[in-house]
Length: 214
Image (cartoon, rainbow, N blue to C red; front, side, top):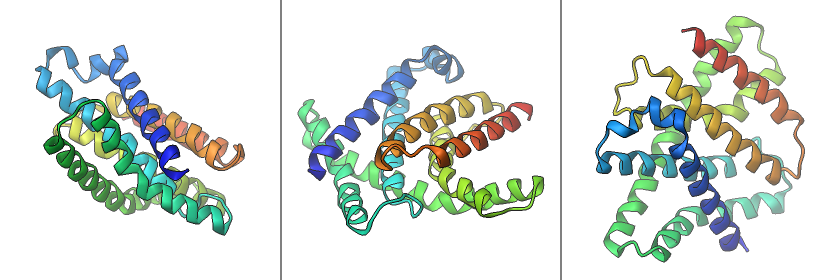
């Protein structure tokens, strides 16, 4: 069952990445039409892996609600995600040597974005506490948003090859897209309970407004 679910999740990730990549605003902000085919492929691959890693980070999120048995299933499902993506590529005719590169790529980005969560959490707490006293609700929203922010910021950095100055609009667009994917998946995993995510969505909107004023 975990393998079947993992296959469906990575397929959804690829579909979401393609939708963002084809978005006219994204293509304009990322200057896609001015890039070589090789560079376009690199950006698309970064988007796909970002969404695959986002699934993995969500599945291991400590604030994801579920009973003990369900937590065990999520752990098994999480381990199945990289293989499911590689299997999907294999079914599309990708050569074996390239599949090994993809395994390394997923592992590398997972380690990077998982590590970046700590800095993202600390920065979010600093911003939030500057506006008001942090309470349990505020901490809960920060914790819930950390995976999305870490992945969006990291992916934005790679897409821009580190040249992120003046490209906040691209980050904002990516954050919106990844957050939508994250919300839809999390609501399913939590059995349709949306109240915490509704509060988190408001926090994201405040963050996007702050970014727009910079």
